[in-house]
Length: 196
Image 1 (cartoon, rainbow, N blue to C red):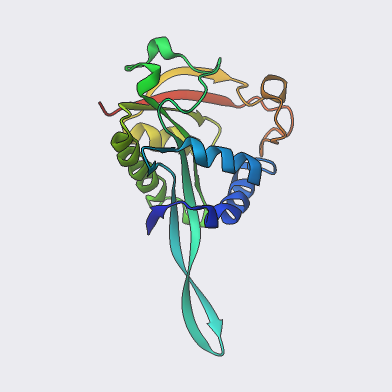
Image 2 (image 1 turned 60 degrees about the vertical axis):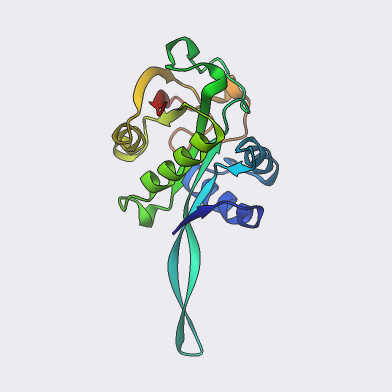
């Protein structure tokens, strides 16, 4: 089930984000800021995916929803365009471009279309907010380059590759890449989906 993310989900989002992307990827302060950047015209562009988890209690199985993925998306006009963006190559102006910040799916749930469902939910929300396109930086070194693959399947077009995008010398973050550690040389593929 796909539904809007709420502050009640923050702890699970932080835990799943740090498990999948590496320790320090999200914390309460950063997630609160991200959350506000995704709401515009009272429309929330952030979503979570829930699955069923069977847990035995007194020899009776009860199903309980558990988070299996999330999508964080910034509303158009509510995020800073930085040096890793190439707006002169975008199909729409900065004021009409949302930013697909993060798509995260638990390892056991990958390959089931959850990431695509989360992306589609965010696209529908940002269109209602007034966005005409969305940009993202996809992790080229994801397993089997799946990040770029699923985004391409959704209509994403490559704008530019940015080597060493997440290197700590560039962004001064506490994030540690799950592949490279604190000296990240992974490539970010700047990709755009035009839905105008």
